[in-house]
Image (cartoon, rainbow, N blue to C red; front, side, top):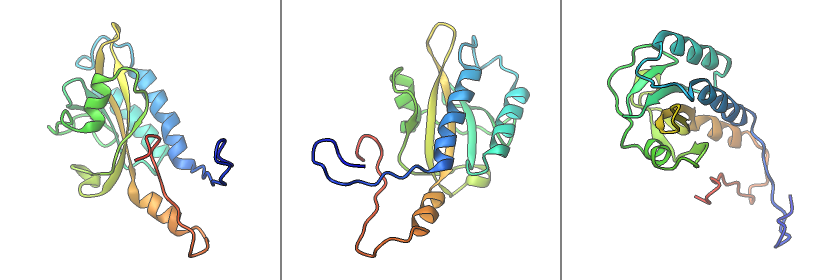
Length: 171
């Protein structure tokens, strides 16, 4: 792809699973958007939905719905997750205080519970709103950083070529 101003040649790689994750996140957020509250949601049904999505998207190592207070409501692993709070994590409060943020891909973090504990994950979040349009929580997915490492290691490129992965904000 040629840069429109500088004319420099730039390669753009379209990575399948991360793109699929973005589509799944939009669908999951749509499923829970507009509910009066996540407090009254059927946790078992939500867990079943998350589990079904996670089964079809094995590249996502964590999948959860987090309420407005930063507590996990349900995950793909369980309908009754333990008391881990996300309220101080950037991917949570950026969604909380920015209604127009949309899909957010954060900086790598280490998993804190279950099978992802200690694993480096790339957090992907989408805001959930209640019927009145207020912040109700987030849908959270964790993509393993190892996926990207393996993908880029598999490319057969000239040793003098460098490949970088950037977020849309340039970081």
